[in-house]
Length: 638
Image (cartoon, rainbow, N blue to C red; front, side, top):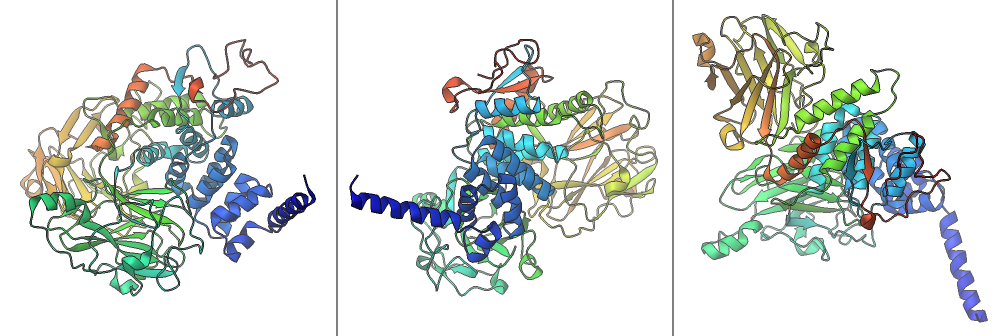
């Protein structure tokens, strides 16, 4: 090596040394203007622990989901993924499903059989047995499994929500409709555009003659080409585009995906984020039925940090506004849908997608396996682990039951008992006797865990028997985020045949029960199977109610009923569950779960990776992996 080469090398090393050692703290970097992904790299170079990095980012006002995904990607090891998710869920337990889903989408996940092996040895979990159920995890699913296991330590009661969130995140809508920014790239100036029209600290409005979306989220993005910076908050929900209707049928078919675009972008301070969609077609667009989703890509990543399911109806030549649930009143009052996770800043990218991806979901089984393993821990303040795990498995079996109709739970009242002769008399009782129950107005989403304990005073108020004068009305209170779906809002056990159930439509669109296949399951005694299944028929408008009553009820009750049924007998009812047939895109995932549960003994499960898909080199331990602590069984997952 000559002298000049030595000088150049010394200069490079010196520059790197200065760059690595000018790091003071994560908060200092964020305040200086570094993006979270940049300060994460610097913190990692300076040996900040992953969990501490998540905490410090959140303290510096970085959104917790963005912080967890950024740290998990930068630190990359499975243990660090586990630690960052656990810390994030400790900080925001109500956003556990978002946090787990954000790590499930990470490309190049470094969790592998070796790292699962090491962690299971350390914590004495995932012990293989000859009677175990084997779960093969592809490399693209192992971060999802690690994330759910970590989150289960903090919020075990949210397992079903986390599993569903991972399924949505891994089985996203297939076709891009519109986009802002460029995924996979960080703009040099840390926002898209120039000083006049940019995506940082601004409101952008789509030019009125732009009717086609940007279908390529990978191409270069220049906001000045189709956007103007003359928007303000008062314009949200008021936008109009000058789109010409297409007369030719062929052109109309080609242009049909061009009719829904992002028409306004609000990137405000704190949580004041909002997007406005515009429907330029001559037909209504049902965002849920057509599976419209928003994907938010954080600072240069080519995998999403948030996948948001949109729900609502957009009339022709009308707008639909989505805001962050924590946005200020001047922003949120315009919202058609409020969501957790609408957290984009100048360097992030946003993609609007639609359609169904009908390919099977790889991660459906492994996430359930991780959730079950997460229950199998020592908890001195609760019931024995074996009993807790048994109850959880029964809940999962019920939630993903393998029937001819793949369905998902929307809401429930009461408790489905377990038929194991361990229930005391307090649990083995009807929902209520000689009472009318009404949901409190600030209840914003249903109870999807139909096997957990039911406490009336938690979300319900009691009234005298046959008190149905107010039935058919529900005083909706505003929720921090949009409702998940429908809500069981009133329950009348009634004397004689005066049985009634009221359903409130808290979504942003009318619902046709027959088309979307909603049904009620009524459980009596301690049976795990429903005694009656009542399919709902008719329509319910948004913010409206739907009343189903017994066909022999007295006239005053039948007069307010939208549907009657002779099977609605609630005198001895232990639980009522409202269900819906799932969207086609997710049937394969639920079917995979149901088949696996049906065919395997879940008492002892472990992870395994096929050798050809395992990026690791196998377990590294002083202890012979073929001679474990449990008497010499083959213990290595490889």
